[in-house]
Image (cartoon, rainbow, N blue to C red; front, side, top):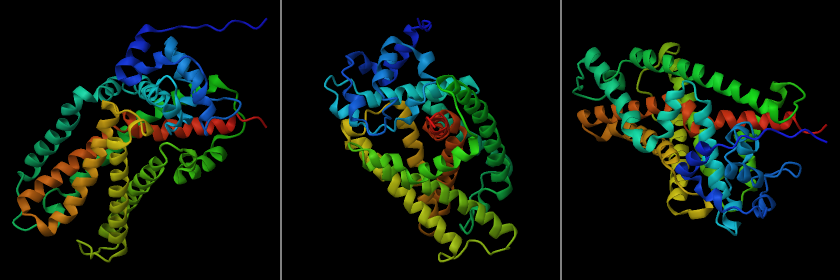
Length: 368
């Protein structure tokens, strides 16, 4: 006779799940429609039926090491076909937010971002106040008579002095969380092979958003996420190229509009605008096809849209706006970018890390 597994139901987990938007899990009566219609669920490990049962029981300790929670891309084919309106896609999304909070390092930051519905003034206000105080101390918050370059508002060295350490701290924060998650995944199946050879095809799959192509109800989600991903990648590459132009090539700033670096930056901005618009449209009119909105999700989307909007206004404003208005738009842009950076390990941005690890784990546990 096989040994019985220990089961530790948690009323606290059920309460947290319900409070974050997963209360509909209680409606599930295990008909298996969700697993039957899911195009992403493998035959030997279908989801989300089993995860819905674990959620009902409050088995948070089992859900946190369940790779299926992250292999789900919230296509919502399950939600639109659920006969009980249990919204499995929303429940899985809520579970992911709870996992991100549980694994957060430091823990207080996870709680702060998880409760963005009430903490958003602090999450946005703190970086804004930071920039205002730092700029007042360094430059006296002086507004240039003519807006030629943004270094007249914020010196380049100050941007590096802020964002490089923040990037380092974010990396230090996400690494132990990711390592802990990877170790937890190991308890759900025996892995074989090496990490890197399995990571490469996963990165290629993520870069094309291939799995989103299997979605039906929320098919447009693929292109919104795809445009945002490559828009951010393009923006990051452009930032690196600008450093090359400034300090190695000694190029005169600002660069001409047809300069290759400038063209790449503008194309990246277009991708960000298109991706943000698609996701916002889906969120506003998608209904069950794109899932219910929670404060956790809305805060992340709001910050992303603010980054895009202020970035575009900063670019346009140099030619169209008065220096004083443009100065404050630029400070607001730096504020939301800093917020996006600082909350990376604790927001939906962290999905990139956890889903990637779950997909690598899936490859390494496949039968030979």
